[in-house]
Amino acid sequence: MNMNMNRNRNRNRNLIFISILLLFASCATTLMTVKVTYPPHLSLPENIKNIAVFNRTKVDSIKKDDNIIESVLTGEAMAGDLIGAEECVNSFVIEMNRYDSPHAFVPVNHLLFRKQVNIKTPEPLSWQVVKTLCRKNGCDALMVLETFDTNSDNLLNTVFSGMNIVKSGGYIAPKQINYSVTYSWRLYDTLSQSVFDQFGDQLQQSVTVSPVESVPTSAIRTTGNYIGDNSARRYLPVVVWQDRKIFKGGNDQLKVAWRKATTNDWTGAMEKWNALSKSVNSKVAGRACFNMALGCEVTGKIDIAKSWAQQAYTDYKVRKAKNYLDVLNHLPQ
Image 1 (cartoon, rainbow, N blue to C red):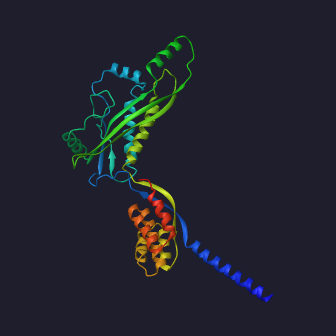
Image 2 (cartoon, rainbow, N blue to C red):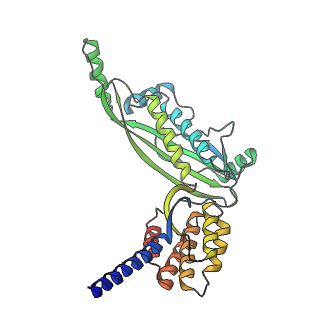
Image 3 (tube, rainbow, N blue to C red):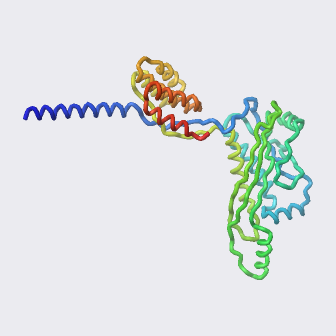
């Protein structure tokens, strides 16, 4: 009887001991919601501090009748392209200026005329023109909206058939039409005298209108706003909130570093983690390496973060570091 009681006591002690170990292991890390800054899709040269944004989509010396014909044939709104292009340019500037540098602005005389009535991207501006515009506007680069052209599937025969129904007193039900906006940009760097970036796309949209109507100007304006925003984000860092694990204990200095991180003093925290990563205590060194990876991610140094996470796993067998490395490797590029 006594032997059985002793065995039960020992078993209970072991269970308690294991539970305590698991508790300490689970408390070693905690979940933090951190603001992470990822690099932009394309980093601008350091010499570009001010960007003048120009609209080159307006056609010079086009006859009014020609514009009317193109509007009917393609189903675009009267003057819709110019309004959409203006919205695109303004939205680009607003989005760029959410950050301090580089600064973007629309010059007073910001229209650059072209000759062709089509969606083909015109020849690049001459460098003499680029340098003159940069000098006049006190900028380092020109961002030029080269094309902005709207077309829809509201074909001419549909319009004419609709008009016939109207004349006969019939009712024309609204229908959904598809339209596309083809656009292109060039970024001219005056210092290197090179087109630093050139890109474009065709955005497919839809809107519900009467068959006798063209694409509403309001729809084209909204599309221009969207294109301008997204074009600017090409050059801007991406800031998101992420849930990340962090080691908060192991020794007194790790606790101090963790408290610094919770108060957004990542520089101070990383100074301590960097020193602790050289500790003779492998547990402390491994946790410090893991936390250094997080600090690097938060400050936008993704490649360095991967190196720290890999070191935490390969050198110190921190299993959480392997999962974290997988997360870092699958971040959007």
